[in-house]
Length: 263
Ligand SMILES: Nc1ncnc2c1ncn2[C@@H]1O[C@H](COP(=O)(O)OP(=O)(O)OP(=O)(O)O)[C@@H](O)[C@H]1O
Picture 1 (cartoon, rainbow, N blue to C red):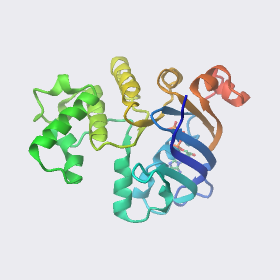
Picture 2 (picture 1 turned 45 degrees about the horizontal axis):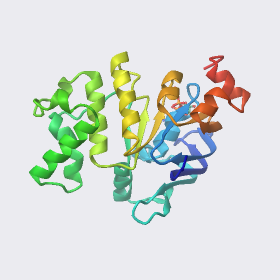
Picture 3 (picture 1 turned 180 degrees about the vertical axis):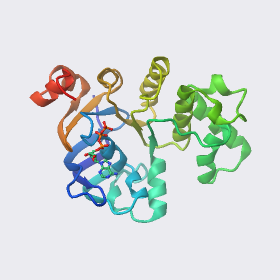
Picture 4 (picture 1 turned 90 degrees about the horizontal axis):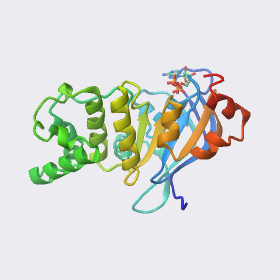
């Protein structure tokens, strides 16, 4: 298996504004390109905090403290850049295009299905109607939603089912061609059939985009991911291939969590 790093987390610690101790301590792990990496661990261990650091979405609120490095590959220069050095607003906006995010609850914008997808493309300066039409169709096909919505693109997106809304959010994220897609428990608000549809989509999407997914669901982590990071109390306890972490964990702590002894 040839592995390229698209991100590299080095000696990374994170403290929320006003908190007296860090929520993440000295995290070191790679994010491999065109692979799915799952972040697992008991409630409060810092999975979401780590995920949200990867596109600096915490910075929507001021005063948080980042230490260490989070490197992201620049696909043009092939250099690794430390995203913690980005300071300007436009650098952060660009970062969030390159590292997109899908939340637990679907968050469609209050506008048509078409405009939900076209929104980010227009922000990137794409105005040509034919080009927008093509990109919207491509993104909806990529998110396995096109057949269900192609005859009602002008309808309000909030009229879609929860599972369809989540696929719309995925279409919206992939339309701007991110390098990495972050998913924070993307199926926890969905029924089992919609969950399977999203899991199949994750597996299909990784040819185009690297995915990092937070999940509480052990079966889901083992079904969709190539690599797994097990976290506990703000530390990374173990990182490895999903097969190794689930079948042959090195740490007893990891084995106990996977066996359902706590968490
Ligand atoms: N906005 C915040 N301000 C201060 N502390 C926070 C904030 N958000 C989270 N924390 C703390 O950071 C730690 C990690 O929380 P985080 O939400 O990242 O854990 P998690 O593993 O994603 O949990 P869960 O599985 O329950 O979603 C916890 O101790 C939590 O209380």
